[in-house]
Length: 251
Image (tube, rainbow, N blue to C red; front, side, top):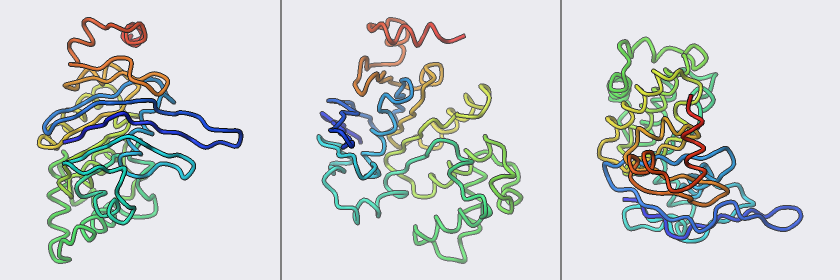
């Protein structure tokens, strides 16, 4: 479903250039959840943004990022825009920050469904069904709330419902458990995996205990992969000192 091959990301700075991601390669199949773990600034989010064509203007990605046989790095912006939110979905850090605080949940839902060409008379029913599928017992009540009236976990589930609307082939969740307690985080990862069971799913996190819930694990440091393989193998028999340090840091 997703193949990343020799991905480089370079930033043009005032005094020269800086390599942010260096020769990164990995793949994710449909129905597989890959955890990408590493400290802040190691290139996790920039890798995700490159796939979606959302890098800052001073950054350039080279290599290949193939989704369903299509190289995303070679597509013009017009075609990428049509894929975002439909065939590919990006869940940014902190649902509460992503949602517009001045718009009710239903407005967010209706706008997403409008972009997916869902008829106006079917949008409310579809929105309620999507919110219900992400664990809301009273989706109608949630529809009339503003984002600031939601807890961190509730806001993340609203973002999840927005992502589900397009039935995407590839989903990247960037720090999806940030700001919520551990029990809720584990529950949300399970819900994420259930909701996108047929998609290639990537979970970006700095918490290796959350990445441990994924099928496969990619450990990044300084813009490069230092370890990559089945999660059980990586956790129980890490080959890199940095991976051992991340594991030892778990309380």
